[in-house]
Amino acid sequence: MELIILLICGGLTIITSLLVIFARNTVHSALWMVASFFFMAVLYLLLQAEFIAILQIIVYAGAIMMFIIYAIMMLNLRQEERAPMRKTKVVGVVALLVLFLELLVVAVGRGLLAIKGPVTDQLMAKFGHIAVLSNFLFSDYVLPFELASILLTAGVVGAVILAKQKSE
Amino acid sequence: MYLSGNLNTYLVVALFLLILGLYGMIQHRTFIGMLISTELILNGAGLNFMAFNRFLAPNPAVGQIFTLFIMGIAAAEAAIGVSVILAVYRRYQTSDPEKVDDLHG
Image (cartoon, rainbow over all chains, first blue to last red; front, side, top):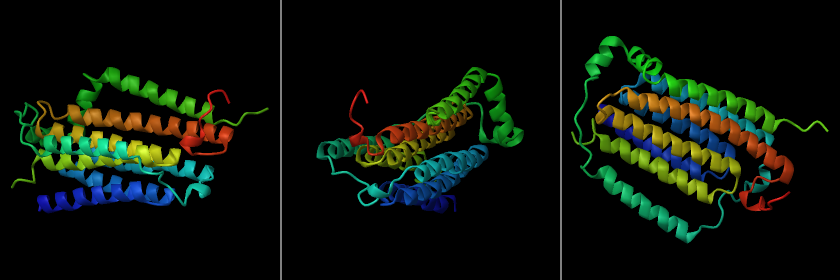
């Protein structure tokens, strides 16, 4: 059962990502992106990360796609709609293919083996998912957490300043 | 069961996300398309972190925290990216990266 869901959602993630890249219209591309985020949220659920799955939908499909759709709305993209892709650069595509094959060998190969640590699925189920996560977040990782909040504040202020109309 | 409960399936999906994102980065003709491709790449990274976290990590919460931070960084990056695109569009009246090519406008 899990295998079927994994294969369907993994395949659909790949297919919707293909549609994101090859859609002729930028708005369609953004909407396929939302679909792709939803299927990835299902993959996160299969990895037993409910909190991250919900955040994936709220943050990516909600907030970030809103940004991008607003940007499409404010720009006049109509003249580019006919040809969303530029002429293929052969060298770049060949390099990309080589990279793809290389990483595929690593990803499908069986060299990635390790031992599971002390925090098992049972422990996660016992204490609740968010409890374990926030314990780490607010003790060991409190410095990156605060840095992330500074980064987000700086991002918001910088975005407002950059996008502000010049008053003169 | 080879595929289910296996790291490799997730890695292949993340690999496709990375490669499609890179392809979009070099092929798209608008800044918005490049921004969307960047989101694909970051998503692939997040999926990789989650998969390694689930199957290999000595401490299965760390990868999820990393994914959280990736989401935060992606949000900040999208905000800054969109406003930079707007500022460039206001100055050059285009969103084609190839046309934005003079150094002192």
